[in-house]
Amino acid sequence: MLEQFKPVADGKFIEFRPSGEDFKLAAERSERMGVLANSYTRGAGRMSGMLGEIAVEKYLGGIIDHCGEFSKSYDLKTNSGITIEVKTKRARAIPKLEYSASVELKKTHMFENDLFVFLRAHDSMVKLWMLGWIKTDSFKRRADFKKAGEPDGDSGFTFRVDGYHIPISKLKKMEDLQSYLGSC
Image (cartoon, rainbow, N blue to C red):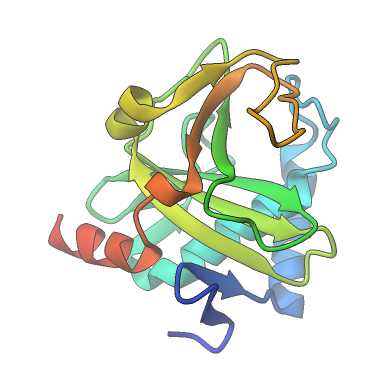
C-alpha cells in the first residue's frame, strides 16, 4: 500500500493523506468542472470531491481511469469497464459506523454506475477516510430514502437534500474492492 494510505479505526477505514501534487490535480479538475447546476454547496465541495476521486484512483492503482469530466454518471472506470461513482462528504472528525453513506437524489443519470465508493474528508482536507463500497444494485435495495428536512433518528442531524442513505457499517471494506475488481 502506498505511504499515503494507512488503516485506521481498528482497520475499518483507510486514511488517505493527499500530497501537494494531489491538491494541485484536484484544483485543476475542480476548475475545469466548474460549479454544477444542482450543487447545494454552490461548488464548495468540489475540492474534497476531487480529492476523494484521486484517493480512490491512487488506491486502486493502474486498473482505473478518471473520467469524471466526461460523465455525469460515474467518476472512475476500470480497465474491465466497471464504473465507479465516488461520494465524498466533509466531516470534522472520523465518522462512526452508525453514520450514513449518502447519495443525493438526482433527476437524471441516477444509478447509472456499477458501484459506489464512500469517503469523508476532514474539513481541513489534510486527510480523507475511505469508508467502503457497495454495488449500485445492492445500494438501491438496501438504502433508505429520506426527504430534505427529515431528521436522522435521534442523532440531531437533519437531511439537507432528498437522497438515499445506508449505514456505513453496511459497506464492504476497501480491501474487498481490490479483490472484487481483480476478479472481474
